[in-house]
Length: 221
Image 1: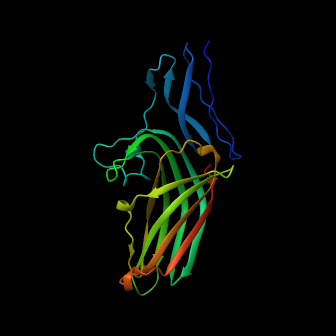
Image 2: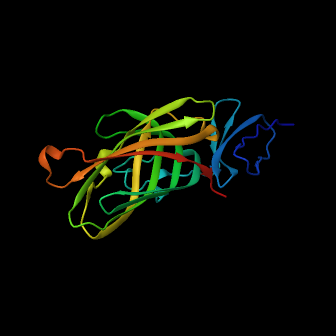
Image 3: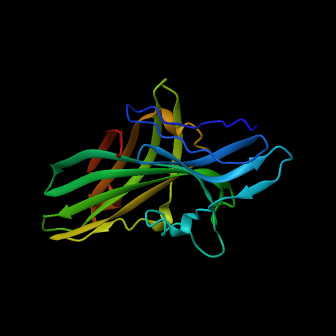
């Protein structure tokens, strides 16, 4: 009989594991989604891969802005987290982040740097500029912190972020980050990131406000 390796998550939620029926030793790969594991492919002893259900990054609405051209990464694992962060301390700008999604992909080739990444993160934000001037807000960097204190630093997708927020307007969307690898999603505790802001047209784009964000994460049920 076969032996099945079970994959689970450890965020204080129920762990559900899915198995496969076959007559050879197999290793499961899957997605972490809403506190459960869903299989996407199977690796057999002879090294051949048998696809069960390929999940493409381009089909995920959280990442549709970063997948361009012929690029078609396959999702190996994914986790969606709830968070509740807001800041309205800067000149009538109301900035909120309410959801974070992290995925591990087989490969993602950056079209600008030609480098390959295996981890991506999308944060859903809402920003309302209630002031009388347009403002510019730019993401700085993101750091994933694991429960053992290990930090994984990521870079911002600068070509997908529209940094001008018009006066008396509200905008929502995603801000994206890329990582060399993310292979310990079941250990993510917090995400730290920064944003820098200034009034549009200010002298030398002088930074007038800095957002230092630390998001405690809760796996979405």
